[in-house]
Amino acid sequence: MLHLAQSMSRLGTESAFEVLARAQKLASEGKDIINLGIGQPDFNTPEHIVEAGIKALRDGHHGYTPANGIPALREAAAVDLEKRHGVEVNPDHVVVVPGGKPTMFFAVLMFGEPGAEIMYPNPGFPIYESVINYSGAKAVPIALEEENGFAFSAETVLNQITPNTRLIIINSPANPTGGVTPKEEIDKLVAGLAAHPHVALLSDEIYSQMLYDGRQHVSLLQYPEIRDRLIMLDGWSKTYAMTGWRLGYAVWPEKLVEHATRLCVNDHSCVNAATQYAGIAALTGPQDAVHDMVKAFDERRRVIVSELNQIPGFRCADAAGAFYAFPNIEGTGLSAREAQDRFLNEAGIATVAGTSFGSWGEGFLRFSYANSTENILAAMKRIKACL
Ligand SMILES: Cc1ncc(COP(=O)(O)O)c(C=O)c1O
Image (cartoon, rainbow, N blue to C red; front, top):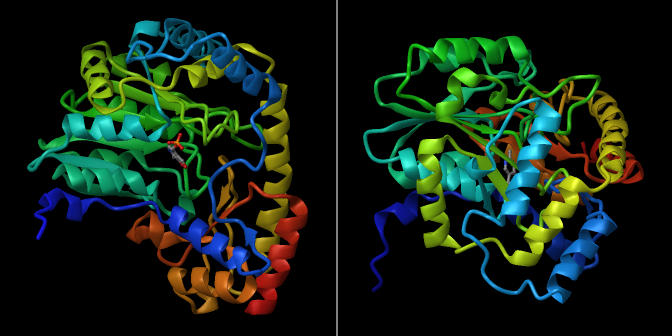
């Protein structure tokens, strides 16, 4: 009999991967599956980035790098942030990690323990709640409402702060809702945080380049008054279609850099060297592929939101960012999980139940529109027929 640590029973998962596995199994059995479940761009990594990775391997970059990332990559990230957000970032505060997830895990490990409280968006990226529970801290949901376009409310967040609150996680543009929180609300949150200097903030800005209808991304880095307690997460996975390369970073407050780097040393030593060189090419090379990809997402977004609103029992809010639509499906009489299973098994359409993103996701289904317009239209037709 093995004796696992209690904490393992508290660790959750990301059901999008389970849906992907089920969809792949059905496809391997000959079923025609359209995958609107997985949250990754359906584009290849731009060629010049791939070439930089290959060149790095050919040039002999086969060994360990500094745990926090090679200096040229951290400098490129700082320059990119200055260009995009108009803020100064010290490259020494940038810690490069394998993807977006490690920053979440490290931030929660730093602040989470029994007796502590950590706030997280719900519905939200499922790993937040999972790792908070794992740490033993109390996971306090920030309820996101359809009526607000799934933007978070500063008032809701501030009202929930207690002396035990250690960390607040926010995410805009958001997974799974596509919600973008307006600047006024972020201004209010930052102003309110002045009364709570014991609270740190993790801002997950991994979709910072995917906003539509002229919306501008607001980075929490733009608020100097909270820079000493802000962890700003971004990365290459979504922007450069590099989910499988495993490359991300965060800008940490000066006093946490050492702790974050130490977690890197204990966890993975460093990100693989060739990937880091590819990351430099991504940030310093032409950005045309990024713009083309976002343009394609925008076109598909218009199609999918309009189509979803024509399905009986569906109601879809405007999807302001990222590449997800999150319709309310209560009118179908199906629960989120029933709808997910029925559409996959009977119509061959992979989606993810809203409840995979927290209890506030009941009655909703996540559609990723990282798929061709043709497939999106075919999927909508099949769902209508299935209902
Ligand atoms: C909001 C959000 N943050 C972070 C990540 C993690 O990205 P990565 O694959 O780079 O770990 C995702 C991935 O879906 C995400 O949706």
